[in-house]
Length: 374
Length: 237
Image (tube, rainbow over all chains, first blue to last red; front, side, top):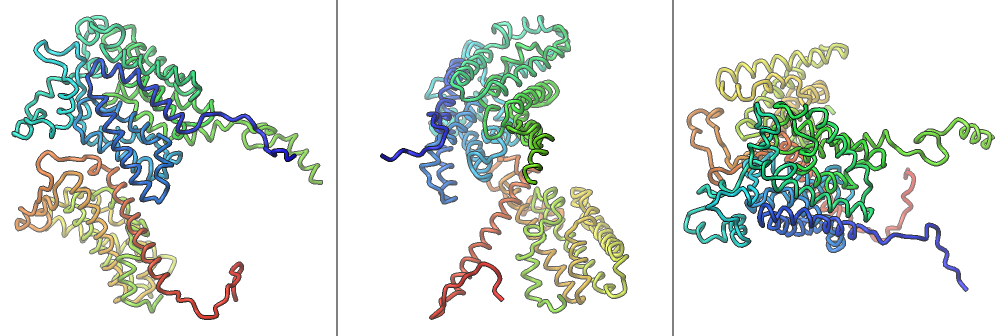
């Protein structure tokens, strides 16, 4: 009778790359649902478009690199990048925004560095930053939530949204009247709560909240956006429950962001930089905390390292949001800390068993080794 | 090194040992001013002029200057030629000079020039040195020009814009608008674009080199009859 000679560990997990990626994609559903509810079909169109471009460009690069195409496509990493990027894009942005951003993310930010596992920077955020720097006009045109539309305007339906994204499908475009050019699109767009809040000069926070529709009609931190953030928070909690990532990085980021805003809240004076609740439920905070900075490739690796990594991202987000000139800060903060992740890893290397400090043998151990050698 | 052939000097400068793509020297101006064809060409020509001049001068004094003082002497020579170039540009292409700004005086610190003076001109005859300066200079200028063209075409959608700054009023209408009004892909005009395009060009050069090497390898080695397999670990005397 031949005994199977297997070395330990015998228990193995059903978790593999493709499964993890699928779960993360699944967890974006609540947030994506909230986005669609408040801002129309644009985000879903963006995500679909990005996914198609991502699969195409990933297949192209892998073919050029002479690797098995299906093997790499089946790990869903390209599709996850595309979903994350598609969510970050403004709904109703023209089609080439998604195409340029996704192909840049997949081809340059991911595959030129060696593919999944080798990229030092988060590909979706690289794609977003490239777009934000290159096309600031299109990238800052967020539609207003449906409730804030002028009374004579309708939320664009699915087909109408597709026509706005792909003007070629619109018969009016062919006859020379472009919707983008005629300025109709501008009627849909509005400043986000983060932008609106920055324009506060001289009003107390309470007065400002009463004056601005965004805040007076919202519950906590701006109509629509609070629910988008809560949606992503739910998705993130689901991923935590499934043990896709540890709590360290998200908690570090949210805590440090909240702490910064407590310090600078200034009890709601006219020079306040926003309440903690406002910062936690605005812009891409929850999306960033649970879907971007938890990327295992580009973040720090040890638990302690992840706590520091997340906390520093939170501080950077607050700094760039409050004193920077960009609409939100997640992408820049994450990319800056991607640079720092190897350094954090270097200083937070966990202790190896049998050694007192990381990589340094304890004196006792060293003496024992020496006596053994003799 | 003294008996290096003119053909070899030429291929070295333009391809095999190209200052921008292989030696990666002079990257600071390479990345900073290649936003458009006219800037790239302006800086490329200025660098080439300094390189030819300094190579010739260094080659002339190579037997008189001792090793102890040769680097300061080379730097003085390069600085002189750079100042000449700067004054020439001020006289004839003043607007371009204003655009290129600090990068014209900074030619002094371009390592490609000091590198050539030290590695080549201080050991070779004046004719070889001048040719080397010309070829290294044109290798550098061509790379600048290609990067400038790519960044201008894809960054702002034009090519040969503002060429009148360099060639006078005759070039005023050379500007070609490729993608229509309103096109812009800003990242290519900004510094990251320079890094990306330069990286792509280096990759392309390495790709061509490896293809050429493959071609040569298949051509060169016809199997000899009766050749035996040989152990190749260790050195064969």
